[in-house]
Length: 164
Image 1: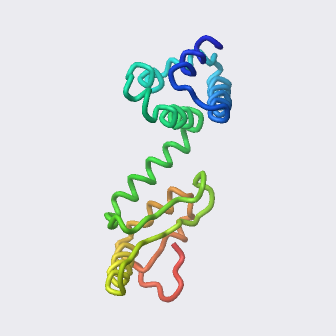
Image 2: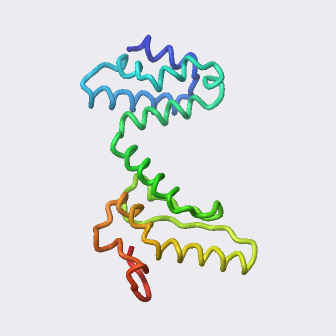
Image 3: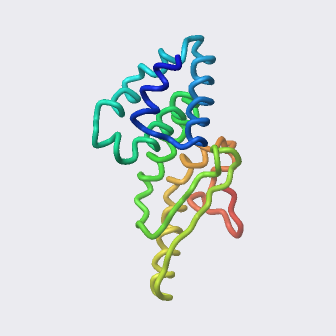
């Protein structure tokens, strides 16, 4: 186990906090799978980080952490992929950002957008209203576990404050 971990540590050279996170994630994955840490470290995605010298030098620490989180929390990873796909399907302009709550817990999205003028603000507001009316936001809220009754929006003709 130590030898397998050492191989990654010598290539990636994580700091103490990141190494601690790696070890915690590895232990959790191994425990959930009923296997040894060495077997977890044989994951193709993790091995790829060691084989590609360019990746190993630039950003592989973060990629390692990301892959370990995917392996440790597969359901959250699937929800995240579903959320990202639904967000892309909205076709919002780059100035508009929709973010899920941390760990996809809670039913609220964070919406931010940037504008340079009143005309820009009006364009963003129209874009957002069209998105709500299209009904496409429903899938984002489903990813957050919103009950069916709370995914209605302006597409069904609600007035005033709307529940999604």
